[in-house]
Image (tube, rainbow, N blue to C red; front, side, top):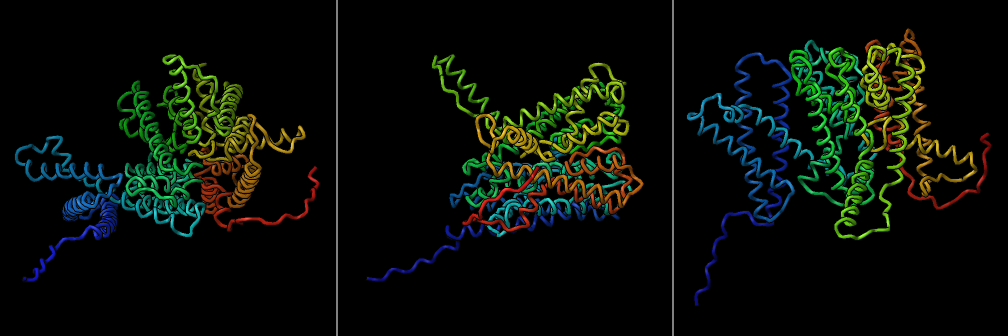
Length: 606
């Protein structure tokens, strides 16, 4: 019997080798998209010396398009063959379909359709390629950011470094020749980038007249990414396109204020979705609030609405108008002011509070439905509203009500004198909202009375709520400090509220945050008065409070600051955004356990 002849194996890649091929394609697309992004930055950031450069860029873009199409097709085929199911597979399929349609429209339908055809113009233009560049770059970079969770860097250090990295990138982008009309200094670019990333709103140059549309888009991107945090965006894209792990969930637990590890990914998606939905609704409402204005007053209404919606929700305070909301064009547009005010409030409440209210509302609807439809009366009421939610809500409402009333009484015959009675109340309400890290102004800040300035200092110092886009010491910190003082006055040895005991660690953190904030603000005032002795102390103090609390309001001295003073305010804004306590936690090694106790001894305090 003849032995069986060996059948040669076909030249195909085995299944166990395919994941390696996917990783190789991921790496290739990362480098390719990075190179394409640099070409894009050169395209929009520099003036082209000749028409020949435009032609070279045109061919480079289309070569990138074809290579990405081939790479994505191969990766999708490999993933489907191996049975690997990435969450992004459906989106990559949609992108491949779009690119295939573009290819068909460009090379096969060009002779049958006129160049003015809208669909053909879109596919024939390079806007689609721009979108593909950013899509591929962000997807691939986000996948690589998940590697940080395996490093020795702790979350606090990574949080601080991510903001430093984003500020540096923003500074470089704002220095591009096409970002400004006549160029700006390095210090002004660094100051503007820091102010945008830290969602502050202080400016040394006029955003409306100095920056081109490209520069304004860069500022808007820095505000959006800085408001939520670059690691939030990176983790969102990375988990969405790559999948999560226990390591990444543990790493993001503190960022998202989520104790349930199983909900980390879901919470991350809800934060990004809620942000985009609220900003979109705000932009639509702002657009319709401009209907009464002549068309030539604000020509780019869509861009105006989108810019201010994002700036308001992120509590940034940047505006594309030279005088901000004090501009005569919209100074009396009360509907626009109310929309912006509520965007600021939603952005400053904190995502855990918003989601807790959604959970509570869903429970109440189900409870009502069960009692009405199924006649099942539920006597037991679940305690769904957390103490954090109640503290934030009550403190926010008290600050809004008291602030509105005091602002109305103090400024009704001063900065609000030109408004009607309705306008005075709207202005007073807006004036109680904006100091808490928003930074918009509808009145002449230099004309505020001394009591109002003191009220602004208090509101700026308190700021927004924790786990939000706002700054300040936070509403819960202020509330816990007040409760601690009250309980000490009553002789209690612990802080109790809403039939719950506040953890001793939270009380310690609250007073540490308060002390550190006063130290940073005091040092900033001290240094600015040294570098700019000609400035009034009140204006300098206002600037320091505004910078640390990432508010962005000013009494008009920001452009007058010397370079050393600008550096002081830059550091103050950065410390206010990342948190001084967070920075200290990142610098010092945390003690794991204390297995000993020294004898207890009291210290004389009063």
